[in-house]
Image 1 (cartoon, rainbow, N blue to C red):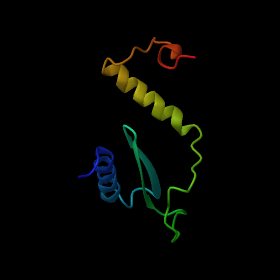
Image 2 (image 1 turned 135 degrees about the vertical axis):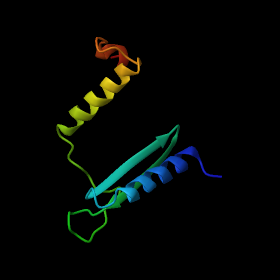
Image 3 (image 1 turned 90 degrees about the vertical axis):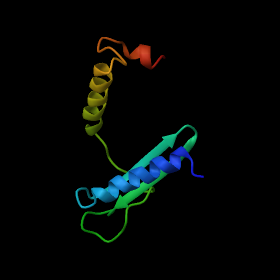
Image 4 (image 1 turned 180 degrees about the vertical axis):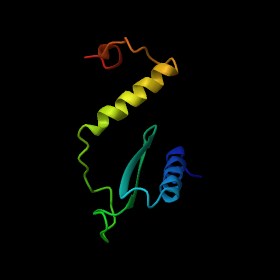
Length: 93
């Protein structure tokens, strides 16, 4: 019987397959409890032959600001946090 991390990784693999061709490559870390799985798909270099693996590194730069802002707004809409909360409340120290 597979773990929930295995099930989540399989779901990510299914989604990557469904959207294959719309992205050059992806590496996804799936963590459920103490179990971690890594799923990868696509080319290491756009148009290249080498497959991307969990050993590749990605510059993320300013892209993360948009992602964090989106998640914060979703959490606020769900009532999980307030936009007026301090960072200290959620990340003590």
